[in-house]
Image 1 (cartoon, rainbow, N blue to C red):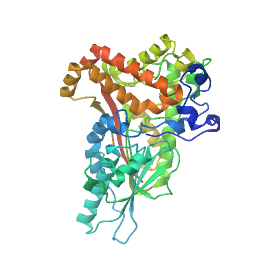
Image 2 (tube, one colour; image 1 turned 120 degrees about the horizontal axis):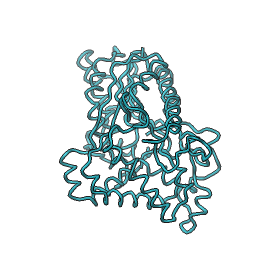
Image 3 (cartoon, helix red, strand yellow; image 1 turned 90 degrees about the vertical axis):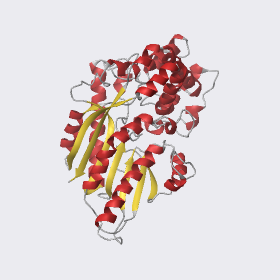
Length: 420
């Protein structure tokens, strides 16, 4: 998962210890110095997927991104089959692939393996040799690179066999924001970013400002929010996408591929409708149950209103029209293909299983929330209260039997472009 650089306004002397070791018996003291969007501790430092491999880790809770990747696989393979061949001899330079917002887990390795294998076969069949490959795994410094490197070395299998974990490329980690330059000019041949670009560089300051018309009171996210909130997020999203494309335009060699899969919405839907349909809005982990869990902490006296209203999820689902506009503004790319698709949260069989065991479904949904939001929730609340929030979320989901009859869809935009 990705996010941006640290701005001067977001830097403070707060230590990493301040984020996770708050005094258990003095919540008010902790909240008086807690991290706020744009405040003491930068979003850049703590926005990441939950590391490790326990039940609440991203590695164990990335089925939806995996489904999206599976859906986009034919498009990516088709792009690889049609892209320019850069090398003419095995003695030439290597081919360079970057995974931007790589996170950790099987999805990360599967994507790069797929790109390398597709290119390897093309070179072997068309030119009679196999080139060398360099694979760069890039994400924010807060990403769990240790787990990723252990996976790459075969210490952790990540659902791969040890033989498959002996990768046919030279690998390196590149910590940094994909809203900044990460690589030398015109050195990348394939750049992919899967399930990362809907994460913003920062929360717009006005949405946490009580005196602003864009104050997002009582909500953790923006689906269904008032116009001023949506406009603030849309502006931030536009600036971020412009920065991302401008950097990739510099880094990708002529004839190279940019392949992006991000959370999105069709152009027919306004920004207020981030998720597409009422059932998805009710069941999405960022919306109803999340707001209810925050309200539970408030009602129980564990937090105050300022604490609740100071938290906003830094994500925005762009429309295909917004992406097209950004591509045209940037220039330098030819869109080969762009489309919006919907991904079902669970298969019908899995949904029937969930209906038979609401408690288990509540746990799995809470683990999904921990995997995606755990680090930023802990930074905002401290670890003990973050656990309380996820516990309330789990109870809410397990108790709402009506959710089990609803189907949640995740909207994604798939973009394949060639560097001109």
